[in-house]
Length: 516
Image (tube, rainbow, N blue to C red):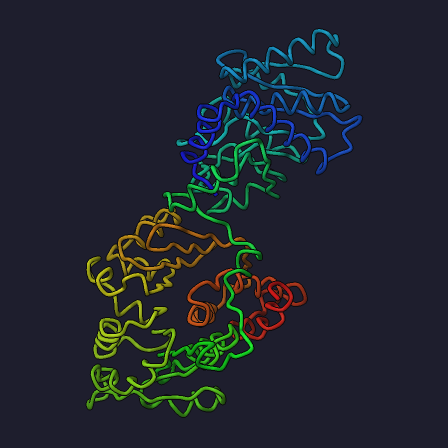
C-alpha cells in the first residue's frame, strides 16, 4: 500500500527515468478500469453509463474509461466533465473523445460540462452505472463546489458505482472522509492500493477493491514499503503469513521448537493468562510455561493442565504487588530456556509489579511481547529508555488507550494510525502492534504491515490476550491468523456470540485450511 507521495514518485520514475509516456499509463489505467467495471456490472448493452470526470489525471482515466465502455457497446455513455483546465494528458483524451463523438454524430456518446452547481441540472435523471473519476490522490481539504454537489448527486442514486483510484472525498493516505465521500461498490485503484483504502472510513467507502496493473514496474511499487517509507505498508496475505510460520523438522523437540513463558494472571485476573498461554501453545510453541503472582497458582492449575505454573513472590505486606528482585530470581531457570516472553496479561498494576516488569526487561535479552499491564508498567518511560533496553527485541501491543499512556499524551494524534505506529516503533526501537481496525504492525526500521482481514466479532473482551499469546508463539507475526480465525468463526456462527477463548479453538483448523 502506498501513500500519495510514494505513488507520485513511482509514476515519475516510470515516466521520466524509464521513458514510458504518461498518456500510455493513463490509457492502461482506463482500459484496466473498464475491464473491471464491465466484469462487475455488465453486460452493458442497453445500459446508460454516467462518467464524472475531474480536471486532473484521475479525470483523464475516466475519459479513457468512457471511450472504452462506448467502444464495447454500452447503450449510452454520458461524460460529465469540466470545460477547461485539464491536465495535459487528460486534455488529449478529451479531444479524442470529442472527435469520436463528432464522427459518430453523438451516437450513444454525450459530453456535458459542469463548472458550477447550477449546471447539475444537465446531469441525467437516471443512470444504470456511475463512474467516479472526479478526484484522485491529491485531496487534502474538504470538497469544494461543484465537486461536493457532484458527490452528493452520486450518493443519492441507487445505481452501482465504480470509483477510480480513490473514492472522491476520501483522503488517500489516512482514509478520512473530508466532508462527504462517494460510497462506491467497486474501487479500481491504479498500480497499487492506496493506504487510505484500508484505514479509518476507507473500507466503508470503497466497496470491493481491484488493483489495476498499468505498466509501473513491480519493484518500483514495492520499494517504498520495503524501505519503510512513512505511510507505506504491506497488506498481509495468506501467502505472506504462510512464509512467516516456522516449519518443524523431523529432529524437532519441544525446546528446539521453542519455549514461550507467559507472565501474568494475578488473583482475580487469571483468565487473561489462561487464554494467552493456550494461544501460545496453539500457535506452535513446543513448550509453554506460565508464571503468576502468589495466590493465583491454584486457579491457573485448574485450567492449564498441560502448562507448568510458577508462583512469583509478592511483597511481605501483600499490597505492593510483586517483590521485584525475588520474582526475577524465581524465573532465572526458565528465562535461560525461553525463546519468547509474554509479559502483562492480568499481571496487575501495583508499584512492586511495575518495578518487576521494568527490572525483567532491563536484565533479560529474551525477545518479549509486552501487553496490558506490562504496557502500563512502562508508561512514562523516556524514548531513550525504550531504545536502550528494547534493541529491537520487544513487541508492544497497545490499543488506543494504552498507546496514549505509553506516549504520555492524553489524546495522541491517531488520525494517521500507520504513520503514528511507524514513528513510535522507530523512536522506541521496537515492533509496535497498534490494535484496532485494521491492526498495524510497524518495525524499528519503519517497515510496516497492515491487517487485510478483520471482523466485528473481535469486539469482545480478551481477544487482545489471545493476540498477545499468538505473538509470544510467533514473535508477533500472528495478526493475520488471529483475524482470520475470527472470520472462520463467523462463517458458521453468529459473530456476536464469539468469546475470546473461542479463537484459540479455531486456530488448529484455520492453520490447516489456510496455511498448511
